[in-house]
Image 1 (cartoon, rainbow, N blue to C red):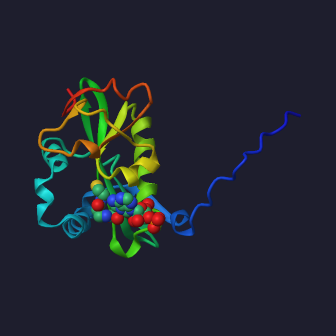
Image 2 (image 1 turned 90 degrees about the vertical axis):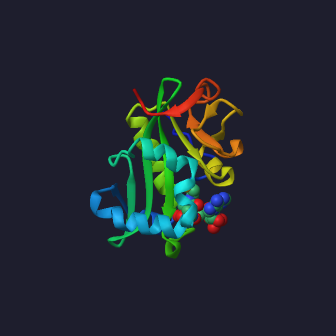
Length: 180
Ligand SMILES: CC(C)(COP(=O)(O)OP(=O)(O)OC[C@H]1O[C@@H](n2cnc3c(N)ncnc32)[C@H](O)[C@@H]1OP(=O)(O)O)[C@@H](O)C(=O)NCCC(=O)NCCS
């Protein structure tokens, strides 16, 4: 019988909260809850954000935009918008938001991982976002080489992060726009 390789370090335990989450695709009935959390999370400046401008031109895909529920109540949301950069198909992730009452329990990370897996299954070449490297870096996102990816508005280059195969980073270049 072939010997099974025993990993040196055991995988981290799944927090109980995450194990009890149900994740499903967003539906129109979720809009009011999501809009309320968006207002609460980002305030009056939310519509001026450059990532929001991209989502104004292209609708998020509800099949890849997920809701996390705990004991039947909505606790977190992530949206995914189909985009292209230099002809490569990908998704723009965001906004990612967790109800303040349920933050720091793993729901955000869980939804990001679900969104990445769904993008991969949909044959996307990358998942792009504008966000904090200390948070998303732990989930496999890397900073985009400065100037490679251009948004239709001002963005701090240090916050442009991408999740893709290592050889794709540096190859995906151009303006963020809708898919043809
Ligand atoms: C960012 C956000 C989605 C995280 O959701 P969450 O469900 O609390 O995330 P997780 O439980 O997976 O991770 C929480 C951990 O990330 C850390 N974290 C949260 N936001 C962070 C940030 N911007 N930078 C670095 N670390 C961050 C928390 O301190 C926490 O650390 P801990 O585990 O040591 O306590 C949530 O804080 C939120 O809704 N914020 C307002 C909206 C926002 O800024 N969204 C992100 C930009 S699109």
